Image (cartoon, rainbow, N blue to C red; front, top):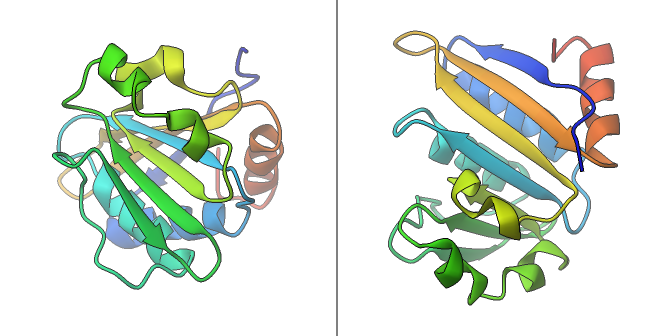
Length: 161
């Protein structure tokens, strides 16, 4: 499935990153899948923490680099936080990811480009790049509905370019 358009967001600091995460989280429905890619230290885990907080996760959220998948109970949704940096695509295929992708929770996958063939057709791909010491540039690519509608709404409301 091809993306219709790429949307952009500029964050000057962590508060701006949180703002994007909060606004997106307000649109979440069960089965939401967000993929996160970007260089080491670009802010993938910080974005994940802001999403988790917004959906009511009270536990400390950190990168699941060595555990691969961490499950949290939020007040709005379960939160499935994945980091697939250290596994191969065949190993990822053995994890039963579809149960997360098509379940009742919110799935957020760091380093998702490494398992591209296993991702659901409908998802929101987020790429984070350095744009300065604190600043980050976000590129949001929606695949399917409702993700395209979300991005259009956020653009109409002045959040995305």
